Length: 44
Image 1: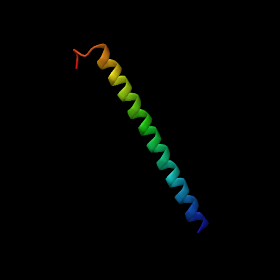
Image 2: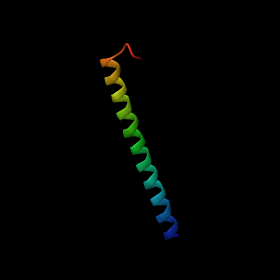
Image 3: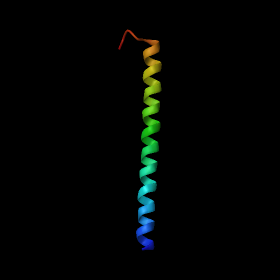
Image 4: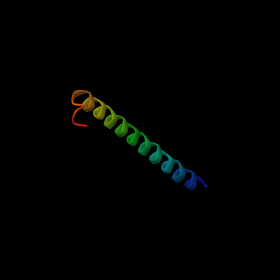
């Protein structure tokens, strides 16, 4: 039972890390896209 709990905890932890990484990456891309659009809107 303890082993199951440990593996479940590790799985949820990796899932949380993945979500955080994706969230940061998306936010960074949105900021870059907005900055680029503000600089040169004619290119879009």
